[in-house]
Length: 235
Image 1 (cartoon, rainbow, N blue to C red):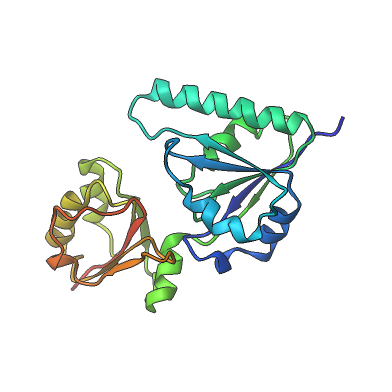
Image 2 (tube, one colour):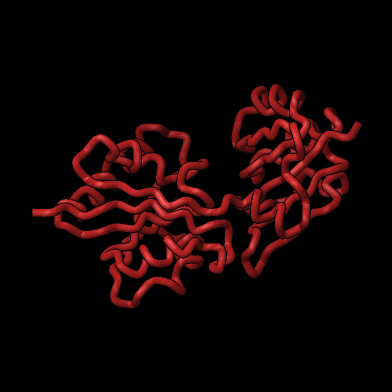
């Protein structure tokens, strides 16, 4: 029996029209859509972005990837999810695994990709537009010019790593700043990166917020998980 194919599809940051033609065509022919979620009660932003291109007859299966510090809990969930997806592929079903932005950049898809890439199941990864590039286009700001070295940093990193990287960066992209904004603000001020910086929360979605004066933004501001900063050092 022929097995199904797993498609990792990047749906971009928020605007459904940012999906590639290949992503749309793939969504139209797969048998199952896998929708990763951080917990059962939350809605999936990735699903809402892709929804206009998903047929009503296509099976949609939400699976939970818990965002908790306990690695035992995480690994148990990854293994259970791998079994669900493997079982569907073994039945010959083509599967689309949706992920925000690009599948190969800080994505939940990578856990499944690593687990299945050495199996007999075919895998095809379809790139998507990362949030920071969509933001750059949205506000008319270059990310890199000529010989600029661009640093992409997860805001979820520990304070020591954040400072080590921010201290030497000329052009900086900080993703997922929702938890460490107080630390990031202090470091950006310390290393002259805050005056030429901008942050967008939930880029491309109806409730998008643009923060243009980060120096004036209080450290106790409650930011959304989907918040990204673009910054350049002031000289």
